[in-house]
Length: 92
Image (cartoon, rainbow, N blue to C red; front, side, top):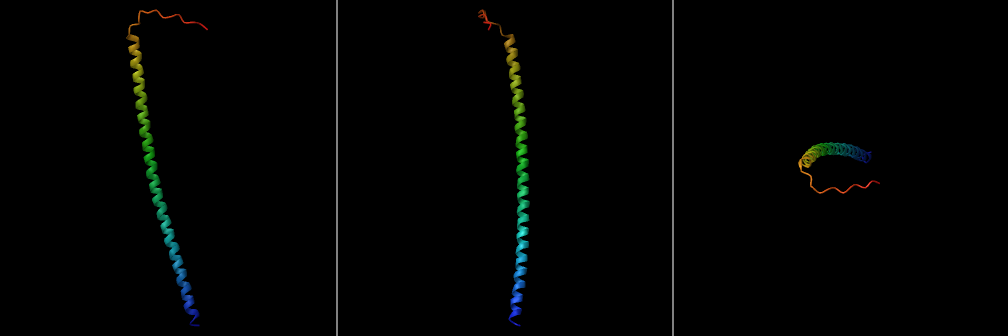
């Protein structure tokens, strides 16, 4: 009987060790998932921020283009036309 008793004790220790290993692994995986979620959230916020910034710059660029068009239209209206006659347009 003494021989079976140490074997039984060893099986219990292996079982406890396996349970501890499983608990450690579960905690590690949960921690890893939390870190990944935090990093993903930070990257998402950064991307959204960059997109918003790009949208603002595009709006500014569009406004500048419209201002330039308005200036060109105003300058074109005030410039005197040349004295050269225009060639007649051909009708199709």
